[in-house]
Image 1: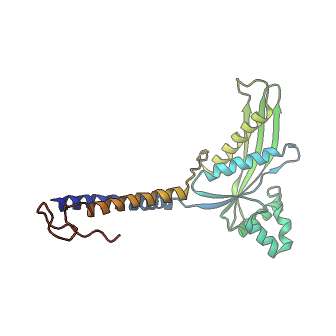
Image 2: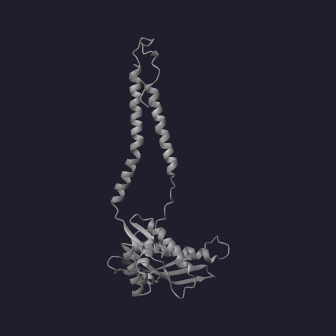
Image 3: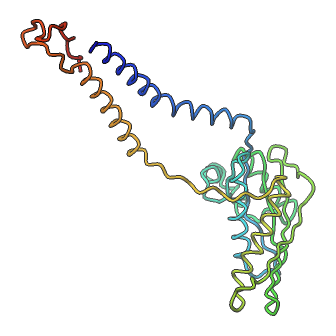
Length: 267
């Protein structure tokens, strides 16, 4: 009877170990299968140029950051924010120093600028490019309103041809009713977000999605927990197999008349 109880316990432990081992792999496989149904395009987002009549260059930088987060939140794009410090660009300059002139921009003002973007996009093996410019910024102190006009163009990186039509959007924001005074920076930032949401909708056909909060996983802690779990399970198996069955130390018959217990596990 004792042996049957131990065997049942061993079966339960075996199922538990198998479940702990298999679940992570099954979860990863299911996630990978779901992602396979969504084709991913590599996108290079070039810095927004700033028109001469827009004095505040921070608007373009804020818009670029917002667009980068917005495009990245959609699983069908793998987004790279262009920089002269990117390894592919650095490698191009080191191998062909004469190409350094094309790395600085602007990238959207005319056909020559678009050509610079296409050349760099091919070096980075991108599928699509996004270039654009902030053409107007207006702020009304009395009304507490801000307007931002942005032009953007999508380019096919492989063919170098623009993907029509050229996009023009206007972002706007009004001073919140509960704001004390008029904070131009806050209102301007809301106008930037409004323009960014409209651009993302025009380019992707989908509404803006806020980027997900990253989940930080410490692998070392996870590994330790896994080893501790396996150790405890192994100890449980050992205790069940080596549990007292009333046997004698000289290998004789157990005092209670039962059969001789099995030898201890080879751990």
